Length: 88
Image (cartoon, rainbow, N blue to C red; front, side, top):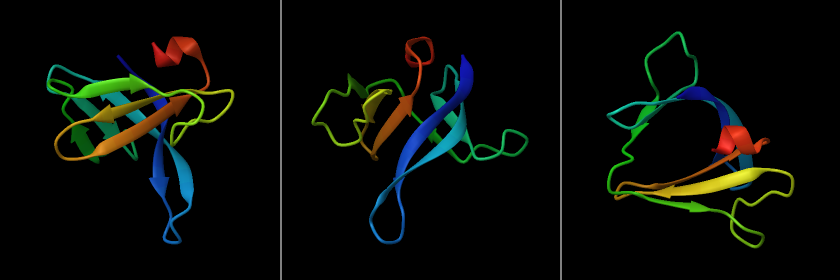
């Protein structure tokens, strides 16, 4: 599976910002690309990670979006998308 979803990040002032990235789910993990024509920016392992759907009140929850938190040993990442089909 692949497509564009938004990844939560923080700007230099500590404010939340959302950046659209191109993601590819592979047997190795979740790769993301700032530019799909270049090498991946990072790899998020999906084995042995915790995936949780965000609900109102959670950090990164935005009304009108489907969002999830992926937690693994190295870091926590929050993603969001506009449609349920993209979320699935």
